[in-house]
Length: 231
Image (cartoon, rainbow, N blue to C red; front, side, top):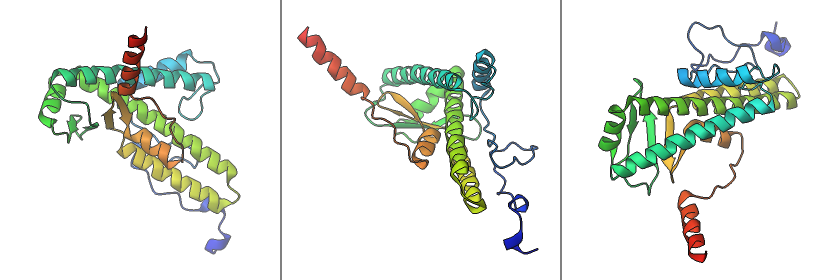
């Protein structure tokens, strides 16, 4: 049978995704690529799913709006707390926050950086395992959000596809996005007092979304000072 007459169901599956855990069978088209997350992040997710309505069975891709909002709110809260902790600890060490500081998990789970203050920052994490754990958990939670966003975009593209070629293109793009997102999952940047996830930034830009502008911490502080002078 020629390639032109081969049914779409018999087409070769996309290349295996390295993000899929070893020992698992290849997932069918449309299934979410496995994202490896920290134990604490999984416990947080399990708690949300357990307390959600029966329809909210999967926060990544298949949850109802309430479960998704609860998950996003939890991630935002954890991110804010860690951002404030890092900002405070860095300031105490004399590390200026004028420029973004990128932090990255290495292959053995250590937090590393290319910052000019690398020695101080890496020593801080080396001496505080709980801080490392918090960093891993928040990075994992953002990776889960990125995975859900990528899956939502994939499902929308599949619904809009007019033929097998378009569906295959959507599957290929989804797989590529997930591979890159997973590669970036251990990277976060402390920028203007707030941690940003490289994985989430990549997926958001990849699907063409634009994050709404947020007032910087410095701008908010300046506004508060101006207000205090007028009252």
